[in-house]
Amino acid sequence: MAEFPEEVVKKAFGAADFRCECLLVEHGHGYNSMCMRVLDWNKRGQSFKAPDGEKGWDAHFIVSPENGGKTTQENCEILCWDCYCKKNKK
Image (tube, rainbow, N blue to C red; front, side, top):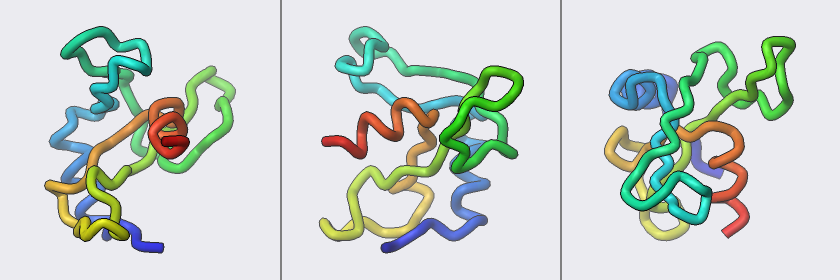
């Protein structure tokens, strides 16, 4: 399975202003609205709730590698763990 290089994820995380970029209305964000949950770099890949009550996040392919997606910043979106799991269920 393809993964993003660490440098790509760092750039995408900064470009996302350390927030979830999910735009899906069916996730409850409202029309034309992003999730915007503030994320902590140190919680990448963390699926459980930390003692501070927050879950982690991960980098997600906008276009999957199976469909020709590349491991570039342009194809990388930063998602909170809840949105990441919902997108991966599709």
